Structures are given as C-alpha cells and as structure tokens.
Image (cartoon, rainbow, N blue to C red):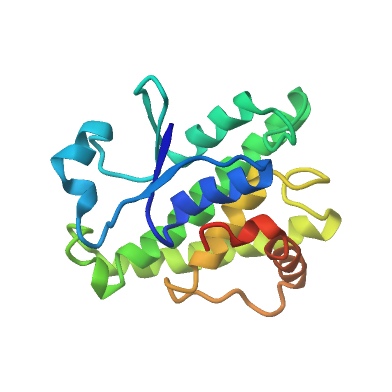
Length: 205
C-alpha cells in the first residue's frame, strides 16, 4: 500500500488529518506538483486525472479523491468513526461534508486558482473575475457556519467528524487565497480554535 501526496495541498492534507485521527500509518510518497511530476507518464498510469492524493492498494488498485480514500480507511477501521455511527448520523455528516466541500473548499480553491499569478500556467484559462466572484461566496458560507455553530460544538454532530476536517482544511487554505474571516464570526473562531488544537491537525499542515 502506498499513498501519494503533495506538500501543503488541501486535499492531501484532508487524508493525512483523517489518518492521524484514526491512528493509521501508511507509507507515503510525495509528488512534486511544481515540478509537474503529476504529469509524468509513470504517475498518469496510476491516476490519469493527474491529481493527488492517490492510494494504491497492495493488489495495485488505485483509489483517487480524498474522501474516497477516507471512506476506504473508515471501512477498514471503523473506530473511531468519523462518518457517523448510524443512519441519522451518516446522513448529517454527509450533508455537512458535501456543504463544506462544495460551498466552501471549492470556492476557496477557485478564488486561489483563478487569481494567484503562480497558477496561471495550471488553470487554463485563468479567469480572474471568476476567482474574485468566489470570495463573497466563501464569506457567505462562513456566516452560515457561524450561525449553525452557535448551537453545537462541531459542524455535523456533537463530536468531531470528517466534515470538520474538510471545513478546517478549506478555512486554513483561505490564507493563500487572501480571504479573511470576519472577526464578528465568534462561533466560527471558537470552533476553529478547538479543531486546530487537535494533535491530528498538524498532519500535512
């Protein structure tokens, strides 16, 4: 088994955070995206989409996409469960995981990839207007999170889940996208401090 990662990238960090919470250790290999190692024929045979992370199982099966990899390890080692323990919990975690991924992480990535000059060669075409248009979308979702967190400690359930991982990784990535959470979002700040204090949060950071 081998897990392909990339330094300081949001999606690989999600998997590293998840594995650290589970206490699972997996051999890893770093792919240098800046040097375009993800575009080499050797890597494209593993993942034709040229993205990381990718988990290659012992039988050679590749599993790409961060949440798919996390679900694999949840099935291998169900406890501590991070996707929910019963039908109700699974539904709530999946709902918040999807919200955090689509409305927050994706918007932050668009704001970064379409505005930052370093991404001009990779994001073709780079549409700066689209990148800027996503910044208020991020702030809108952060406001929604702040209101929801007024009534509970974590995002989906009364305990930490994969939805919290996706959200905190996206929020931490806001720095490179030059997006700042408003100071009045105090519930968000309290949640962010608690999640960031978890030992597993240092994985991949």
